[in-house]
Image (tube, rainbow, N blue to C red; front, top):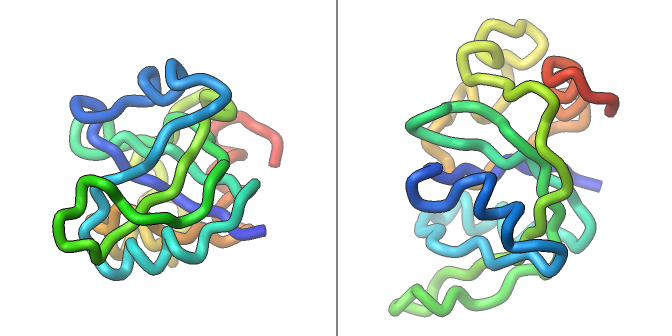
Length: 139
């Protein structure tokens, strides 16, 4: 199974709001970048992703699960973009900051390090394990 990283500004949609959405989860909309769109389209039900607070915290704070695959984004007037549904799985024991990620040699090739603006990114299996280790979690 693939792993992902989904970025959200906490002032727009926070980890706490994602948790409050409950077991049903909620849609992940508003993506307007074609590379991010392709990543959303590649997601499969049951895959997991890191929930990343961008701008204010700049840290991985939790894990989400894809509960519904790609479908049209009702907020896109052009009809070109879509979304997936995600549910919160768990908060990380310790958030993993962007600074920590950039200082970890094993994560030097991570998309977050090299293209930090991309809102939906793939995460390799090795990167997933290292980030979980940094968070005090078991892979």
